[in-house]
Image (cartoon, rainbow, N blue to C red; front, side, top):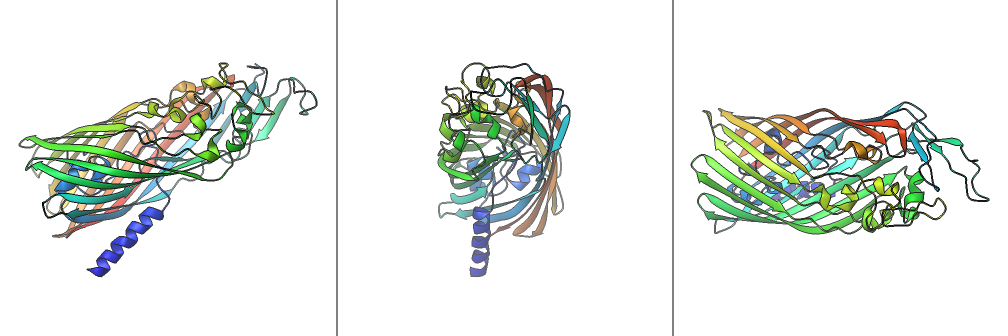
Length: 464
């Protein structure tokens, strides 16, 4: 028993110290956390099956008894941007780059970093009164891009007296997507949820998770946006910065009639510490909170072989977070007075109180899954479809964060090993999705963002 506990503690330590998720599936939220739910396209608010289910609905933990789950996901996002047309000489303002073209004409660049290993861990204790206390360690979002190569072309206005070598009307070409070398961002998020779940009666339950959230972020290759930043020294190339926050998730489950179950869960916005090293990039001096989200779901017993149909509706409120949802427009509509020597002034500048951001919109995701049992195998399939968070007007900045995926197809199984242990497997494919629009800084150029994803997940669980 001591050896088992030591192994469990070791797995938990690995999960706590390993870099967190780099998912970018439903925006930058994962399509699912629990391996069983992953195979059902993330659905399971009304039908919890393991100790990672707390990430969806804490109320489901009480039905899991005493057990643990440990595993990992291999996630592969394939991201690309292309830029066609430009550069032009249509100046948009008196200071800073008037024309900011991605490439010197046509350009297509793939992001580096196409494989990520992401561990997870869950443990549930059964209390004397039949209720449970559990811990779930997981990532629920992230973004990692790195674009090497390529060039950017800037068309400059008259430089201030005594500064800058470029005469009026000169095109200058610089290495990198935005003309400042390799460009990209890395956002990692780790969640540790401690959950108390209790039965209301024999067919319903409630649960609450106290959440400790941890984030790491870095950005590079954005130096040519310094004229638009309230704090150019804390805009880019400052390595990783971290922030923490504390939140809560509430859940409810009930069998409303035999064979029909209902579930609902809500997580308010989590207030995170600011990224001080990127206070000149994110709105409100580096503020980057976790957006509120909620899920409602139904589960129906259908067909033979213990068949279950699950349907979830998930809402993610990206518009809670200014750094994510504010559009890039304040950099061009007069809300930010750009200055290449000292940085920008105005609430609309990068880092400002209402600073420019990525322009993401709230999204609603529908998830449908079906599972059935044959002997000691349980099989699962699923499909999800959600809104596009990135409008076509926001493609310029979202080269960094191309969370364009809307559809996911999933498959998986559970193999019963013995009376107390199982092996879970899930596969996800997100078909190629793209968003195209006009470069904010050069109306003669079109930019397209594109991504395709694959995911394999494996987990071992044991009851005791």
